[in-house]
Image (spheres, helix red, strand yellow):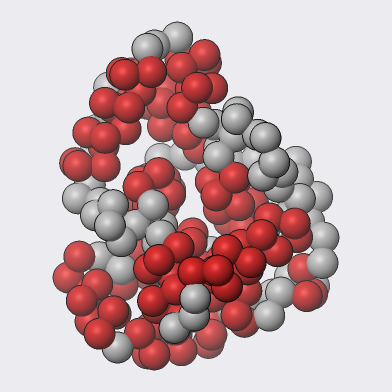
Length: 189
C-alpha cells in the first residue's frame, strides 16, 4: 500500500492521537481535505463503519503493516487491576470495533462497554474531558500497544481474524473468538 505526501502526513498525525482540527493545524490543509482523505483511506481498506470505529481500524491496519512507530509519555497506573473483562474490551476496541459491536461480542450492554472504557482511560492516564486536540480512543490504542499489552504478532492475528471473511462467523458465535482473547492475555508486572 502506498500513500501520497498528504496521506502520509495525515496518517502520522492520526497516529499521534490527534483530532481532525489538530490534523488541520499540523498539516496545514482544510478540514474538508482531511475528512476526504481519511474517508478515502477507510474506503480503500474496506472498513465497515457500522462495525468498526473507522479511525481506530485504519490505525490498526496501518500499524499492522509496520508503516508507523510510537512513543508514549503517559504513566501507566493500576495495571494489575485489569481483569480479563477489561482486557477483552481493550483488545476489541484496539481492533477497531465500535462500542455497539463490542457489546454484542461480549454480550454486555453498551453502558457496560462505556464504563469499562472509562476505567481503561483512567488506568492509562488518558484525559477524555474537553480534549479537542486528541482522540482518546486512539491514545488508548497507542498506549496499550506501546506497553506491550499486545504484540505486533497478536495485532496481525487479530487483524486477520477480524477480516471481512471472518466477521460473520465471529458475530454468529463470538465465544471462540473471546476465548482466544482470554488465552492470549499478556499482563505487565
